[in-house]
Image (cartoon, rainbow, N blue to C red):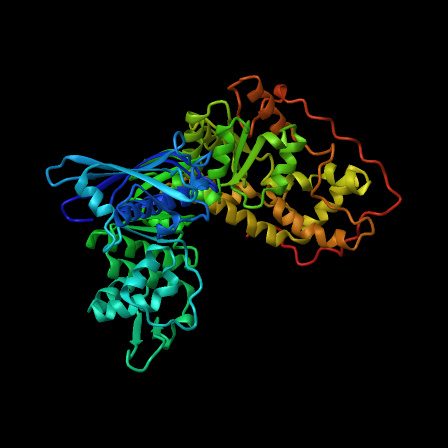
Length: 604
C-alpha cells in the first residue's frame, strides 16, 4: 500500500463460507482452520471485492456486466454469496478495508455488492474514505494478487504485452503468464531483487531469461537450484512455487498478496525457508501477505512473526500474534474435531501418544464409550505431553461438557512416577488414562485374553507366553532399559541421580515378569508362532476376557461427575467390568516353540 496508509483490517460479510469475518491484519498474516472453515473463502472474498471495485471504477457505472470483472470464481457471481444468492434489494454482501492514515486516524472503504436488475449484471456501491477507495480500485497497480496454489506451467509461452499480462494476473491466471512476468522483471531492471528474494528459500538459485522480440515467438527461461540449468517447465515444483510468489511481489508490488497454501509442494525444510522469505518480503516491501496453510512447519516458524487468523465454521474463532496451540491442532488434525465438539457431538475427546489408535479405539468401545460420541487424536509421543496438556486446558475452558482423556503408556514407570504424570494431567482438567500394563498392546497379550482366543487353559497359555519371553529375554532386557532411560529423561530432568536404579527395578528374573515386558514386543514375538497355527487367531479383537476395569472406572466416574479418578490405581469400586470367561480346553495343541537358546541368567 502507499506509505501514507497502513492496512489494519478487512471485514467480509456474506461470501461463500463466510457469514461475518472481521479480520485484523499485520504485515504477515497466516490463516488456519479445518476443512471448509472458510480459509480459501477469505482470500477469494478480498480478491473478488477488489475486482468488483475496479470494474466499478473502470466502467464508471454502479451496475455493469459480470464480464467486466477481471476475477470471479464462479460462472454466476450471485452464487458466491453466503447461504443465499445475491439479490437486488435484500441479499447483499460487502467487503470493507480499514487503514491507518499518517495522522494515525483509522479510515475505511466499503464495497457493497448486489445483483443488478438486469440478469447477469453486477451492482457495486462504494462508500467511505475516497483516497483508500482509489488505492483499492486502481487498475494500473493491482491492489491484490491472488495465488491459488501452483497450477501447471505450459511448455511454451508466447510474448504478451504488459497490459495483457496484468489483466491475466489480476484474473487469477498468473501461471499462464509466468515467463512474461519474468521477462518484464528483467526489462525493468528488477532481476537482482527477484534473485535476492528467491535465494531466501533456494540459496543456489540462478535464472536465465532470453527473448528477442524481432525473431522469437516464445520466451525461453531456464533455472537452476545449484545442479544444472533446466527449462522452467522442468524445474522442481517447490522452486516454481517460490519463484511465482516472489515474481508477483517484485513486479506488481501489490498491497496484498493472497497465497492459498503455498507450502503444499515444498519439502519441510523448504517450508521453513519459505517462512523466512515471507518474513523478509513483508518487512522489506510495502506488500502485506495473507497466507492460508496446513503446514505445521510454516506455522511454527512464524509463531512469533505473523498475525494468526483462526477460522472455524465461517467465522473468526481466534486471532492474534502468538497462538501456541495452533501447531498442535494442525499436527493432530484437530481443527475439524473442534467443530464437532462445538456442535455438541463429542462427549469424549481422547488424546493419545500412539499414532495408530485402532487398538485404543477397540478398548474404549469395548469399555462402553460410544464410538459416535468419541473423538481420538494423537499428540505424537510421550515427550509431547505438555502440548497435550495445553490443548486439554483449552478444550475444557471452552466446552466443559466434553470429557478430555489423555492416554499415556505406563512404560515401566513406578507407581509413584505414574501418579506424578496422572497429577499433571489432572492439573489440566483432563482425565488420565495410564495403561495397566506397559502399553496398549499389553491388553491384547494378557494370558486370559489369549487363552480364550486359542481355546486352551489359562495355565497352558501362561506357560507358553513365558517361553516366548524367555526365548527373547535379551531383547526384552534392552527394551526395559531403554524405556527406563526415557523415563529418567522425561521425569527427572537434571535429577537422574534421584531416579530409582534400573537394575534394581528390573531384577534378575528370567524371563522378565509380564509387568516388565512391552506389549509391542510380545505381539512381535507371538505373531510368527500363531501364523503357523491352523486356528489363525487374530489377537487384536475384543473378547470378554479383556481386563478393562481401568477404562470402565473412568467412564463411570466421569458420567457420575466424580472427580476421584486416578489412573494407575483406579478404585475398583467404580468399575463393573465383565468377568473374564474361563477358557475351555481345545483338542488343538498350543503352538509349539523351539527351545530357548542363548538366554543369559541375569540382567546386564
